[in-house]
Image (cartoon, rainbow over all chains, first blue to last red; front, side, top):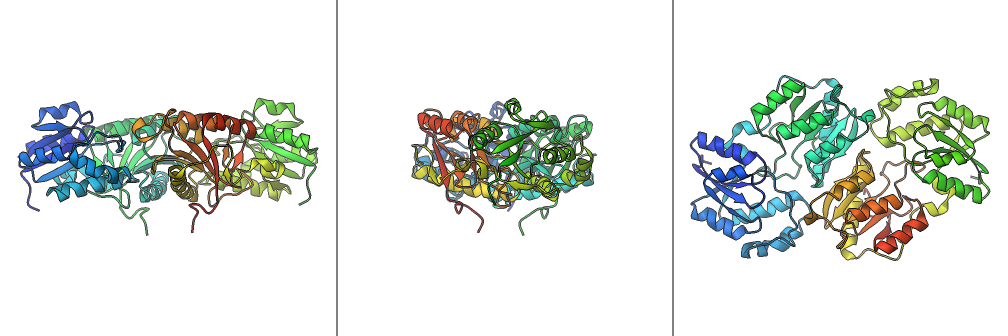
Length: 283
Length: 283
C-alpha cells in the first residue's frame, strides 16, 4: 500500500481520533473527520469533516466519497447499540437484520467493515497512521513486572484468550493467580471500578499494589478495528483498583496518550508491559 | 449411605444453613451448627453448636468430634479470604501454603474437603439433607422461557461452561445472544447490579424484560460443596437488571427459599428454568 495522503477518520468516543488526526496533520496527511452524532468527542469538530448518526451508513459513505476519500480508518470506542431500534438510512435498513443477529462485537465490526469494503473503501488500522500507537514488547516505562507479576500476566493472558475466543470481551484482572474480574459489555473502566470494590483480602491496594489488568485482541479479532486500547483513564482506574500493572499484547493493543501515560505510570510505580503474542494464545 | 441422624453443619453466609437446619429438625435429624465467626448468619445461633474463626480448622474438627459428629455438610457462601494473612490454628498453618497457592475457588474447596476427609469426616452435599434443594428439570414456576429466551439460555450455558472450566466463576448474563456480563470474584448479585447499569439499548427493562442469568456447576466442580445457589435476592436483582428469567442446571444448582422464590417469580412473570446438564456442556 502506498501511503495515502487523505484519510477518512470515522471517530468513535475518546481521545484517540483527535490524537491520530493531530499526528496526521503533523505528517502532512489530510484528515476528513467523519463524526458520529452523540458519540465522537466534541474536540473532533475542530477538524474538517462532517457528522452523521450512527445508523446513517449510506449517507456517511456518500459524504466520504464526495470528499474524495478512498481510505478510511476507524478509531475510538463505539458502544454496541440496539440495532433493532437504531434509526437507519436505506443502506442501514439493509444491514439491520444482519447486525441485529450478530452475537458478538467482533461479528458486528466485521459486518460493518465488509459493507464499507463493498462500497469501495480501503480500510486501514489506526496503527498504520501512527506507528507509535501499537504496544511494544517489554516494559513501556521504567517499571517492569517481577516474577510473581509475570505469573499473573501469564494466567491473565490465557483467560483473556478464552474470553476473546467466545467474543465476550478483551480483558480480565488476575491477582495472585485468582481471576478477580472478567470483562464483557461493561468495558474495562467499569471492570476496574468493580475490582476496587472487592474485599482487600484478595486484591492489592494503593500502598501494596498486586495483580494485573490484561488486555489482548480476541483470537478471532479483526486487527484493523477495535484493538484493545489503554490510556491515562485506564491507568488511573488500575491504580485505584490496587493493581501493580497493566499488560497488553505487544503489537496487539493501542497505547493512547503515550507520553502522559508513561510519565503517570512511572510516577505511580505501575508497570505497563507488552507481552509476546505467544503467551497464553490458542495452541 | 445410611441416613445419618446427626450432622455437623458448617455454616457459610446467607439463609441456606438455617433452611437446611430447620428442615433437618423437622425430619428428626439432629444438627450441630458449626458457625464461622463474622460469616454465618446471626440466626444460626438459635441452633445447638459452636463458633470458630475461619482459619481455626483444627479447633473446629476437634469440636465436631467432641460433639460426636461423623458426617458434615457445608452450606452457604464463604468469600475467599487472603490465606496468607488469615489467622490460623496449628492445622490451619499446615494448610496455609497449599490454600494460598490454590488458583481457583474450586481448588480451595477441594483442599479443605480433603483435610476434613483425612480427619475422618464423611462429607455430604446439602441436597442429601433437603431433596427439594436441587433445581428440577424444566420451569420451576408458572412461567416458561420462549424460543428466543431458550436461545439465550443455550448460549449462556455454553459461556458458563467455559468460565467454569477455568475455575473463574459459575455464571453469566446473556441477552439477545450478547454476553452482557461474566461472573468472577464479585459474585452473582454484583454482576446483576452491573447489568442494571448497562445501556438500555442492549438489555431488557422492567417493562420489557429480556435476557437470562445462567448459573451452572463448573465442569471441574466438587458437587458436594459450593453448588451454584439462587434465592429471593438473586431473583430481585435479576428483575432489577431487566432480565426475563433465571436458568440453572437441573440437578446442579441449589434453590434456596423455594416457595417464596416461586411465588415471587410467578408474580413478576419471570421464568426460573432448569436446563438439561447436556446443554452447552463440554464435549
